[in-house]
Amino acid sequence: MKIKVKVSRFDPDKSPERYFSEYELEVSEGMTVLDGLIWLKENADPTISFRYSCRMGVCGSCAMMINSYPHLACHTQILEITKSVLVLEPLCNHANVRDLICDFSAFFEKHRTIKPHLLREDAEKLDLTGEISQTPQELESYLQFSYCIKCGICVAACPTCATDKEYLGPQALAQAYRYTQDSRDAGGDKRIEAAAEGHGIHHCHYAGACSEACPKGVDPAFAIQLFRKQMVLRSLGLKETRPPAGEMPPMTLNPKPNIPKPPEPTIK
Amino acid sequence: MGRLRDNRLGIAGWGYAGRYGFERYAYFFQRLTGLGILLYFSLHIFVTAYRAFGEQAWTRVMSGVDKPFFKLGEYMLFMAVAYHALNGLRVLFSELGLFMGKPIRPVYPYETSLKRQRPLFFIVMALAGVIIVMGGLDLIRYFRP
Ligand code: SF4
Ligand code: FES
Image (cartoon, rainbow over all chains, first blue to last red; front, top):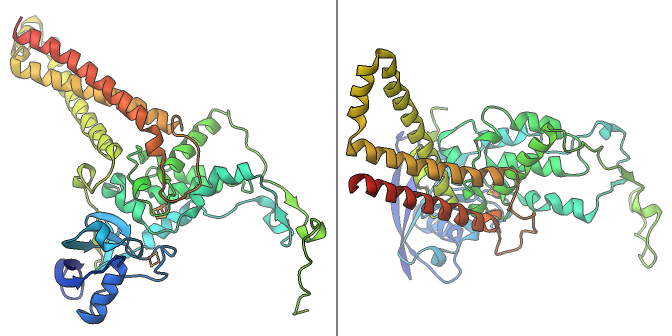
């Protein structure tokens, strides 16, 4: 089946305005938008620019607006979207660098603001061969939010991001909750401080578009509300701050029966 | 930075941005009604300030606003307040993590907290609808006493 593909083009060296290029594409069952773009780049126009890496919905680099909805190009089959016209544009609410490519430096800067790593004072003293204990329940309480691949789709869907350039955005705020909720972490206060800033968590009003669009089922809007609940409980003194989970001896010291021994190290 | 094209949707993006669920539109109407109520408050302060200029000025301005146009405006305000208050309550509940369930494993097809809180969304919208209809009956009585 032949369809028409309209690709948003932007080259700051040529013009400050964007325009659309139109192509014809022979589509087959199961063909993804990324497959289509690669075919067009090889056969119709080598100047189309777009980002991709893994081609399997893992790296998060191929996010774009596909017929006005943010999707991962490698994760979206063309025939599920259209049988006539496919319109490809760069992600909304991000700065456009070239054709379908967006600049993610502001996005990652916001991600860094909320300190997306385990924070604990005894980090230097931990035995690096050991493990930190965590119950399955503790794991389940944040696991969903740890599947984020930083594709930026939630930011494109968010109506607050549509007008507020400084807003931390669903991705960073959801990760603030993900790390604060982790029983191995003790940096909640620092993240709350970062999230409560002027353009922070209070600008979310649960429009929920981020959660609907997220290609990994992360539900960032939910994480934001849970984080907000935690902020309220902490400020009212209703949630006791716990020390981060303690260390466990390395499993190898006390293996379960029936588990074969690991091979001897090859490098001494 | 001049080489980057700002691709933010702007205010138009509050209204429409793609095929999203009800909650994104509820967000838009919450902002719209919020601005409408703010506009009413400024007019309200302006009108009631006439009280300071004596009884005559007050009666004159009050008879000036006792017109069908202003009655309709008042009803629109009533609708805005009913919606804003009830939807605001839903957002408040959500912000306290209520009626949204627990985090789950993201297994395809993904289910989000939006789906779990949707019954609450429909309940508050139905309540707002009932209040708006009752106010409408009152408005009809004004036009056809
Ligand atoms: S939360 Fe979802 S949509 Fe947002 S960056 Fe992470 S994976 Fe992408
Ligand atoms: S190319 Fe990696 S997510 Fe699409």
